[in-house]
Length: 373
Image 1 (tube, rainbow, N blue to C red):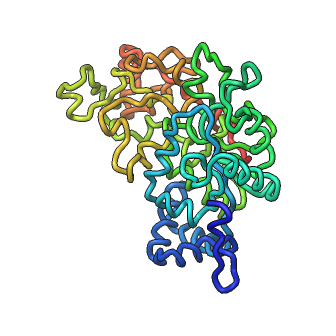
Image 2: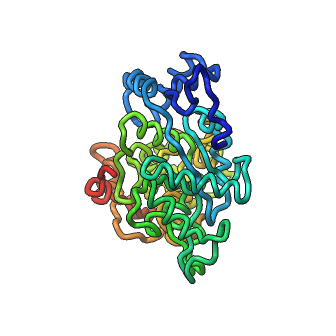
């Protein structure tokens, strides 16, 4: 990565090519390019007719420089990126973005690596994008996470503070995640709390869905701004709807058909996992529609309840994982669970009361908190 990739073709630096020109140069056909644009249109919750507009924008825009920082993390989000196929990680690194710094996948090491990062911050101030993976410890002046002799806190404030925009990937970078779980011994926080003045968009999840990262970058390239967000700084295209509302097991919830034991007939038939601890009724994420691993599956589809990992402080508020939803303020499952079956609302409400169903829907937060970063 870095300057070694800045090859010249007929006197033009590769960094000066548009995204589509780079894809063409790397052997990506126009047809595959259009398929990618269609996939991004779907990921951004835009109509299919918008794909040509995305293609036109990518025909004209030059790829931005991106640096990827890792702090208190398990590298799960990097692993998700490495397994991305829409586009592949090679296309992301070599074509769509100029990834100049990423500790896990870059060739440079030691002082050479840090020089690359310093060069980007100095020469491209206000023009580059930062992706942050992992939480940032603030206790004891941030000594619990250091890279190249600098604390994560100092690096984040310098690099994110000088960036055009910062994308916090995974729940740790977004909200502190597991390191911030009670009693939070290192004082771990998300990027926005550590660098309040930075422009940050959060893509929580354990790990994030790489399609959401790609879609966020494409949105930025096409529209010249980050997508609209909810009150937690999450893009509405990916976190605007509850998992419960798009879940393939929702009809069984509506019918009162629940799994009561792992490996049971009800479990094999795909009945609702609410009683087994599924947190889908109060979790906002597009897992049911985007899925993971080439859209192969997702936790609930594979037979395991949602853990609510895209929500702030999920480890403290959503546990125990295999018990029903905790008593969180904001109860109201759409006041009769989306009015299941017109004419049987009273019976439905009584059934919900009997099952003790509790939800932390946040309609007010979602509508009032939507904003443009």
